[in-house]
Length: 432
Image (cartoon, rainbow, N blue to C red; front, side, top):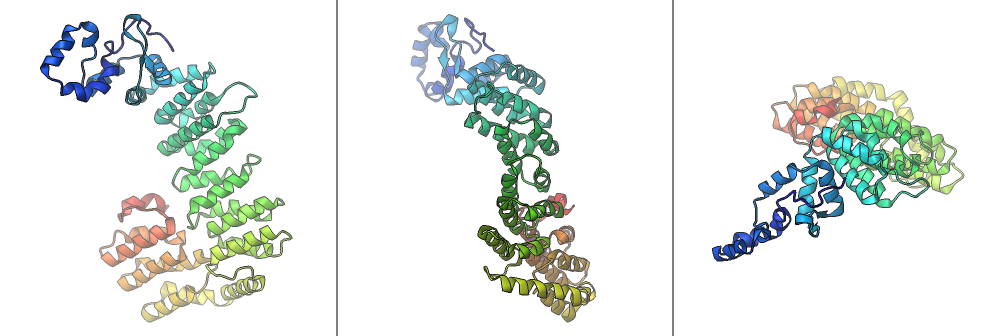
C-alpha cells in the first residue's frame, strides 16, 4: 500500500497546509503574499487553493496511497522531507475521495487487503470504507476484513465497526437482508451478536421478518433475537409469521427463553399467545409467572396484575363471547349502518382478545360512502392496533374528504409506528 517516497502527489504542501491557511491567507495583504513568493518554491507550495482544487488532486491519487494516508494520517513530504501530518479535515477529504472511487477499484483492493491480515487500524478503515460503498454482494468480505490472528479475541472496536458497516449496507441494499442467515453461519462467534444487532437496526417489516427467521439457528443467540424483536415492535402489532416464531418459545424448557418469549409476545401484541400465557401463570418459577402476567397486561390493556383467577375468568369470558355472540355482532359491523353500526362498534371494542378478527370487520366498512361511518371505522382500527386494516386505510388516504384522510393517517401511524407523510404513495410499501 505504501509508495510515494520522494514525490509530491499534492503539489508539495499545497494540499495539507491549504486547509489550515485557507481563511487566513485569503485575507492576507498583497505585500505578505509577495514576501512568501520571494521566500522560494517551498513557501509558494503553501499558497491556498480552493477546496475543489484539493479534491481534484486527491481524485488523481491511487487507491493504495489514499488508503495509506487515511490509515497513517500522514502524507509524503517534499523531496524526501518529513511526512506531513494530516488534520481531521484533511483526513475527512481523503476518506471522501476514497469513497467516491468506483467499486471496481475499491473492492479488489479490499479483497487483497483482507488476505494480508492487516493491522487493526487498517481493518477499521477498510470496514468503514466498505460500509460506505459496499452492497449485498460484499457481506462476506466484511467478515474477512475482521479476521485477525487465530485464537486471539476480537477487539471490541472491530466488532462495533463491523456492525456499523453491515447495518449501513443492509439499510442501503435491501437484497442483503435475505443473506444475513447465510452470513451468520460464516461469521466467527464473536461477530454473531453484532450481526443480529445490525439487522435489528434496519427499519422495515422485511428486516423484522428476517430477524425472526434467525431464531433457533445459532446457539446462544435466541435471547438476543427475542429481545430485539420486542424492541422493534414499539408496542405495535407484528406480522403473523413473526408472532408465531416467538410464540413457539413459550413452550421451551429453558426458563430464560420462556421469559424472553413472554415479554416479546406482549410487545408484539400477540393475541394467539394468550392461551399459552394463561398456562404459564402456574409455572414453577416466579420469574416466568411474572413475565406471563406482564405480557397479558400488555396484550389486553387490562391491569389485573398477578391475579391469576381474574385473568382466567377474563379469558374464559372472552372465549365464550367469541363462541356465542361474536359472529352476529361482527356481521352488524360489516353490514349495519347508522345507529346500528355505531352501537355494534362500541360493543365490539369492549373485547380485548383476537383483535385482528374484529379489525377485519371494521376494514370492510372503509369503502363506504358515509363519511361518519368511515371515520368511525378508522378510529376503531386505530384503537385495535391491528394490521388487518392497513390496506384499506392506505386507500382512504386518497379519498376527497379531509376528515377521512386525517383519521386514516392517524390510524396508520398508530398501527405501524411509522411516521410518514399523509399521502398514499408513502404508505404503499406497508399496504402489502
